[in-house]
Length: 255
Image (cartoon, rainbow, N blue to C red):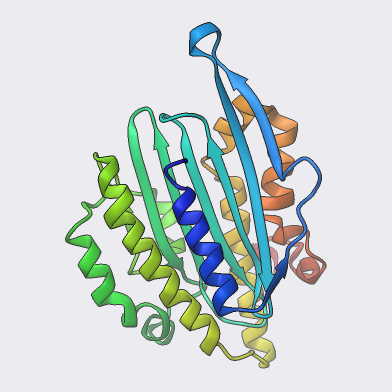
């Protein structure tokens, strides 16, 4: 079993238990993709599998898992709310490479206003502080990325796999449980100005993530550029292609 399979199994079990869900469409060729890296005794099969659900308030609940032996294990798990709710995104990047583990866990905000922080970040600050004491800060992040993270962003590079299996897994469970509670409590937004702001915030986030996806290089080496770009834009960050985003087809600076 892969390092991150328990994370994926827990997430989908919890979501199905707490929310009515249905399958989110996954294009042909994305559900599973295989290749072999290395030669001879160093040959290693790499398998990328994709999973996706949807619910009344969540447009896309999706996961991409890469399994390529002990030195290549990746789970990218993201929840995208529907555009009629001001919910943050849930994001978990769990990565194991030859150099070690990289873990990022957050409820990525639509807005950075005091009201939004009080609603979605402040209630979880005690939880954040608990895990910050156990997980060392992972280091500086790019300046351009900072607007897309919240005050409860957990970012760490644990040296021991045991820490991933215990402390990181516990943090993942607690954060996801809290997020599902936010979803259950979320009320549909009807104010037109607020809805426009939500659409724009989601558009900015998804455009940034699609343009800066750190997995682009890995996927390109494994499966080629054409498949990679279609996977990023047609599955991982497909909001930009959704009909409801048509009014935002123009970059924000021109709106």
